[in-house]
Image (cartoon, rainbow, N blue to C red; front, side, top):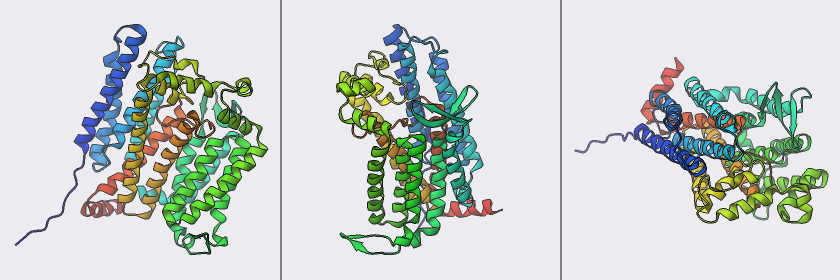
Length: 452
């Protein structure tokens, strides 16, 4: 007589601990390589720097071990490694600019990293069930729109290099659009869970595609207009692409209809043509994209040309950490940090970094597949796609696949707004993955405890 027993999946916390130590080890070795190449000596504060990064990572690990023990074991090590590599490259560029550790951007980035991890821990402890966020669907939508509009407020808004996407409070600047993408993802997930049946109703077939009914086109039309408004008033092409692409992707996941993608691509193309005709700064971006080495482009900006030449100098294996000249490119620590890695780590190293992002997105999508509620599926898929789309837009701009947009690379680029938002995004994925990987019996018990 055979006995059937339920298979309990491994929690993965020990695997996560091992990978965290491995990730911190890679960061520490990279830091040593930079110091040896630039100062010809091993840094005296190596134990302090490495121990501090390990302590930050272990703090999240311990919280997960006791409050979300089934969370995906790869998400935290990947985020830690990317964040640490970003700190190393920013420090390396500070050295090239003649700034010490206390004077440059690296110390500020480390401070923002610690704050981002603290917010992630607070999110995991506060949000015991991701489905709680569904109660705040429309509040999240209002918050997302308000955050997008904040830079337009005369006193708060702050324009940097033609884009009005910042708010300034005394000496501090913040980019609210980074937080808006998370709020809007929560809103889209809650909204589409309620309306996906209506949006999935068949319409007419055109060229082999089943298109939605005309009355159901309101949501995507509203998002198209909102994206154009962001592009028109804030002159921010990257955010407009990100928000509209996020909504179309989540709409497709909710309805499983290719017709929505066709409509989204058509509207995106129409918006791009319209924006090109109306906005001079977008025409400049297209000029730099198509002819970066021309005399006409050089009169405007040679940033893209310098970045391309830096990556070409790196070749297949790179010049080595600390041995290149990434500082020649403007904003090498933020907008063009991918070009900085491409120069010093080469194409092989850059592909390894991109593979980490692919793995991060894959684990998020796996979480979306595994979680049992529709809201969690849409939220995890939306958050994962936002990372994928942002990486494509940034890397595509630096490598001339698409025009430059001004977005920052998640975890790598210098900037507190991006770090806080992306650590919050990882915390949400960790919380959702905890329920996705829980055995059904444990999930039922947890639901009863939460109900009390």
